[in-house]
Length: 397
Ligand code: SF4
Image (cartoon, rainbow, N blue to C red; front, side, top):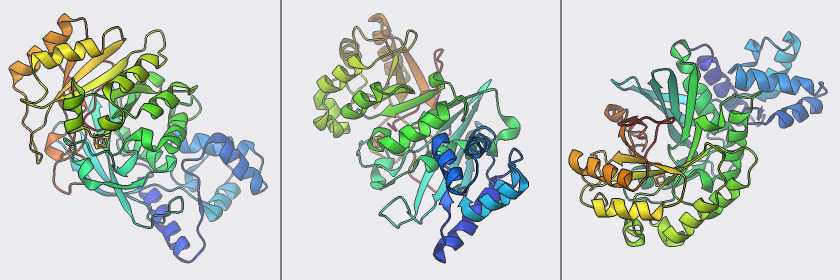
């Protein structure tokens, strides 16, 4: 049994009761170091207690105050009376034969940060690899972007997630698997939702993930994937702390992209690629372009040559994701067309890797995240035909 998940859920249930009685506690999960320092000062404690609380939450993954051994016992009790740690409830766990686990999570329905009162459910996926694990997380419940090949799109947008709800998915997946954790953790923002349409909470969560005093993840090990929200890409480029950026491309012409990603009518390829060219990259950094191969639609070698022309002169790699057969009216590419596509990019000097989805049997593969109660649905984070630092995820932008 993971160390504190159950107590975190119990805490959540207790705080629900508190809210129903009109005595809601302030949720500390998702708060920054400065916000926690301010919260401690507000209750008459020294500000450094906030930094200790920050460490206990994010570096030690303590989900109840009683277990925060870096705080005095009296303060722990006081914190439990005043605050709560808003962990989601695990509604279901789906275990894949490849070791991946898809979590169906029920989020706090009280909506203190939202106008919506409706409860929300999202999915997160834990994927073990040799020497590392990857956690794929959601940034919104549902999605408004309407990519035609994505089951999440069919949910519509339910609501944005808070920074705490985004962070909780990583904390929970790591804690649930703590006995088997490898030394390195990758996080990919490729589950439900378009991260750049929930910008502030996503950035607040990323700052905690990438903080050496917080969750201590390296910037090269956290990847944000977007469907191509140009103003969001430009804004992200101005941030001091940035994750890696992946762009869900999936087509070689505007006409093709319009047909499967209506967002392209708002931000067509010219504008999208101009923003990508302007995006600041570190010395060893590159942009990742994801390309879901839909058999007979976008998988010709002519498509590959056009993609190479679109990306010419940029420091990139391309992840090719063969379509996963499912409920939507597309067909997978053949093994031959997939390899020809990869070779055509390679011949033009564009590094390309074929990614195969994990978690197919638990609906955790690319484009499958749609709150399925069945044994299958998540992102395509990949086993690959080539070397790669980070797994590629999916259709989920
Ligand atoms: Fe939204 Fe990503 Fe699905 Fe597109 S692929 S509908 S952006 S979740």
